[in-house]
Image (cartoon, rainbow, N blue to C red; front, side, top):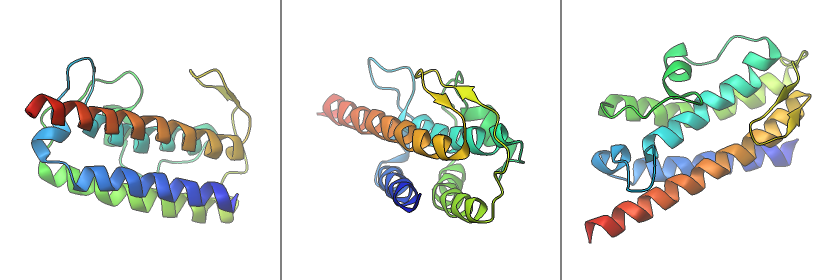
Length: 156
């Protein structure tokens, strides 16, 4: 699983880079052809990671439920995000990855409720969830990059 944790840390570094190097205005802008924004895509990865790993294993979330309720699948982008919330998300991107590794190493995920993703994959264990989550976060990283490119194109 070390490789999968390494991949998770890298995807999170990539997301953090976008978050830190995109203006606040651009993070919240919904580009033409999209139904959400860069900020939503990044916050959604944190919320989904908690659901896939903690909720489905019957464990408490490691973050405030606000993040889950505001950015889970099916939510709409929050267009009134304060800069302090962006800073909180920066922290969560790094810390939830570290906490996941510690929890995994301490056998925190002894139970897991099987779940079929909307992507069509069956998750039967925490290992499946970790591997799938990397794919999910990479997908949203791609969306965030496309949205940033679309925004830059709209500005020039």
